[in-house]
Image (cartoon, rainbow, N blue to C red):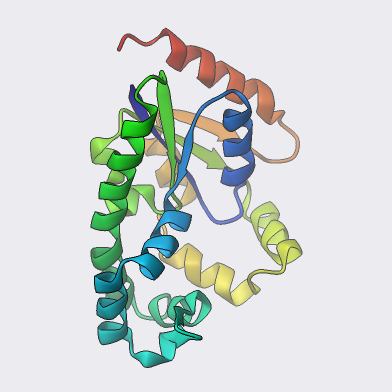
Length: 196
């Protein structure tokens, strides 16, 4: 079974692309969602987060992810600390998850900061989803989950679109002009031809 990473800048449409792969029967591990879940269920991690970022990140006995994000995206050393606490646990969780899908030709690991986390080192290939910044910002504002300032802060802490594209094995252009499904199908077919 091959392990393929899928990444892209905020608002690039990674989730949409992942849904298409899922429709083709490809299991997708959502690293960001897994990290948030681990923050809730892993008491040692939760304690470490409170110890490093303060009790203000707790709301109704749960991690307030918005408050945590506001802290870490404004200070680079805070973001590095968060990543150092969470990423090893996510990687371990991913490996356990992969054991449930060993009969599949390949699985996907979706992660916004795939290169930044070092995940590419244990993956067989990486897909980068790209979109122009203007379109990505419009998508984020339309979702209503982030402000333009939050969008800019997140962008500052991620590798550039160009670098992600340069380091990728496959690129999917999601610019609302280029058809996405044929690009996904081409990649799916190519990976299916790989030897185990």
